[in-house]
Image (cartoon, rainbow, N blue to C red):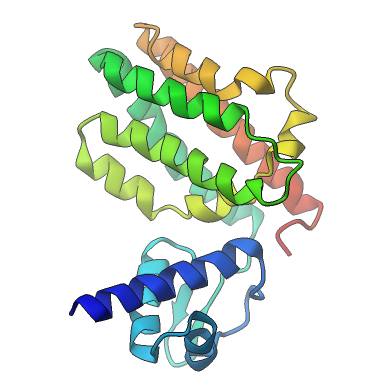
Length: 220
């Protein structure tokens, strides 16, 4: 069982990586045998990994046809961000009213790491993605509401956050060096309205950036 779990995780990580990097084409059905060769695992392990990726909205399963990476659309981007905003504005409210200072310190440290990642180095884009996802999921975890965390994990944040290279945002934000640290400060301001508004603006900013990149053909 341990070997199967390890192999399934290996397949998941390998397929996730090529999805995030844009190596696999969107909208085309994927061969499980090809994915098994790519991940150097069994087809059984690939199937387990695909179930997990489908749960996270990174692939879709079409009966009698197979699985594929969804073709991105403006509607899908808006829908995902709408769900994300509903969840994370609630997260901001709960964190503000809970006022856990240990969580505030931890989040500020992660935010500082994100704000100082040098994305002129290509290899750092993946690092940014992982830190950014960790930041948002840790906020949800810190509320103590496990269901919020579960639902946030289900969104394809891996995909959306990975494809948000910081160097693109730096052109549009004069305060990028403190962008995430400012968010933490607002969330722990002891003013729930400020916390929610800050998160609303943060998510809306991300959505507008992705819509802009969609219009420029970034997700093709």
